[in-house]
Length: 350
Image 1 (cartoon, rainbow, N blue to C red):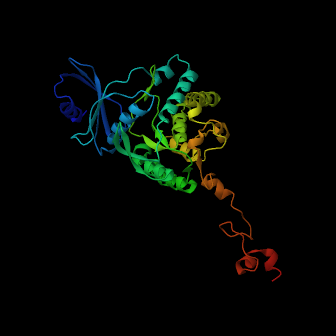
Image 2: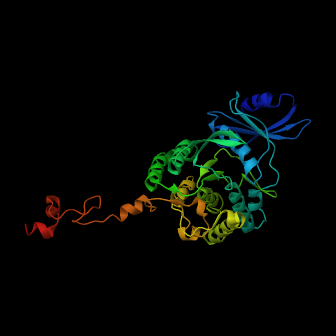
Image 3: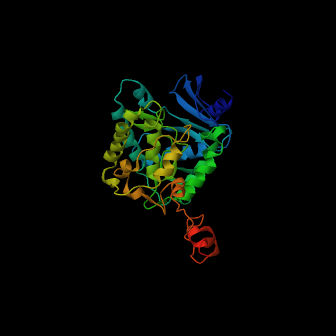
């Protein structure tokens, strides 16, 4: 542990007497510690070793979600994204860690049902346009606004170093190309999306979410599919279990959303890139959830549309072939030299 945590404590809580500092496992670029004091309650302290962009996003998102979403968030004790070092000090989130319930004797389907409800609660915060969170507070979020496609691509590029090991160095660029080719467009209001609802970031009894540094505003289906990846798309879930687990999660989302999220009768084309996007840590893309299974669960207000929702590779496979078609699949004119020279039926009679 560097002195960043100690310096952050001196700036945030100068009058407290520190007893212990226990480093926590965290992603690259962050330093987090659980800190106890002689005369007050313990806290978590997070600092960053690089750009404070992610910490600025988390400070804004956790405050905004705490004020606008019916889901538990860590109480902010002190925060300064422009400090030296930048820091965020929060109280411990009450409740039982989801992972402890998952690995223990708890009912997994019941836990996943509650997870779906939490995702729906986060989606209750709606906005005028999608965007990457750049700052803000409890009163409002500052966004780098754009289309949903632009927001997805910016998010991929910003998280590439965090998500993709060196052996997949070319994957972010390919993923951006795929998203741009699909070009999903939201037909309804975008919503707040947590961005990392993993088993170690979710608490139960009461429910709450930690680690908001990946929050964004966009398609609510993205948050739903991301939750499925983190919980039911993991190696410890068998093929036989996955369907019932997915159904439990989706049922929890629908039950909690109620009339607020009308049931969609169509399919959300952005599920395709969202599922690939959420499968970033796997050595292969992995199994995907059939679109028909998600059709009746997605909210109408967040449904996306696109000119062609089929994956780019599938569209390429379906390109028409034959001497009467060009390489791009366009039909050649019968009187063109290229057509007559390439078609045996015409070249033989010429």
